Image (cartoon, rainbow, N blue to C red; front, side, top):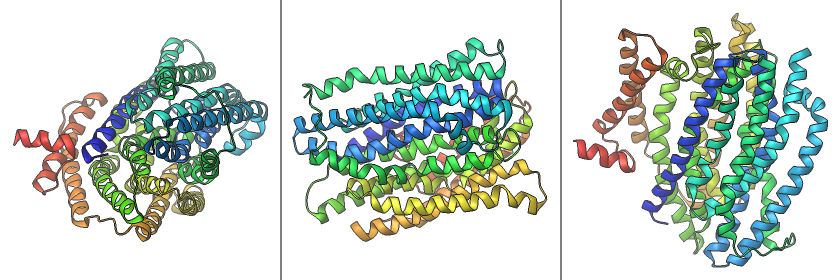
Length: 522
């Protein structure tokens, strides 16, 4: 695939993700309006961890990294019948395992709650149990939906697979607006959980017709002993641990947050939703677009290494251009970002400040997290899942140890309110993310050669982002109105435009269409 084709694929992924994330932010705003940082909000956030863990165990990131390299290589070698047979076999395996785990999970929920939220008691614990039992079937449907995503991505049909979650979000928004304000918060949480399951089914349904079109004629044979199926299943576990490290870290953070004052779990959830936006739009989008292309590279070891280096260099440039200003915005203008999205109803000024502190902590590791995704994809394209696994384990251990120290003992030592310990969770995860990134980069360069990264260019990006953030902060201070939505539009627009101007003056070219747009206006 050419660079133009790669940019087109990344744009399709980004467009789909942007659409679903924007609707997701609308969902989060409506959620914040009706739940705030209440016990019901904590219960729902924690309840979603278990089925979400199942989704990530067999879902998008893990399935894509283990299945796409094999499926895409078969297609590149013009062996479509074997590719279809592989897809059918993996579907059968996923359907059986997720159905079994869902059945067991529903009955084992009371014991699982002790693992995800040991700090919950009484009615809060009972509500969490009920929510988990409702959400489990929806998670199984999302896993099957991720199977569709793997096939669509391999055929370079990125927009549908990443825009499909829109319908999942719309189902939840509809439920919140329908019952919000008319029922108690615990009852509303149950209604929302049911809507999640319905939305999961719809998300799978909208992708299925296109997927079936790619797999025709269907083989109708489930063969589990072929070498291709064995390769996918052999790579599955290490990919799960390495790609799922964010979820594992999030799980640990949720457990630690359950020991903090009421609202800590939901504050962490609100911040993670915002933090996931640049991770998905830039890290995930570019990595997802590059994985099939890198997996399809044919030739000698040197030729494949050259292709991977070129794609990595180009992808890292694009990631840094967008992620660096995102990190600066979270740190300097995080209160504006949080207030613009969440400030309404039960979500007040003190909640804005609290979530901002958590968001600021996550900005520390934002660039490492997004760049690390691309390096991991390069390893998966080389059929090496063990190396990312080893480094993921190191990251998890660091996250657990530092997260505990920063969240629980540190606030007491500093003499500050325990509630601020939740910001320590995201800060520690960011520090661990940089360690993992450094290890991934060093190991991959030993395999394929040096991946060139311009330190001067990255420095100019940071300077441009900080200058534009200072200007936007000044605008915030002098605005004659205080309505969150209007302040957000003004301040963040100044920041975005200022960043584009500053980087251009500093000699840093904007990727793709942005370069052409700025060129026409100059």
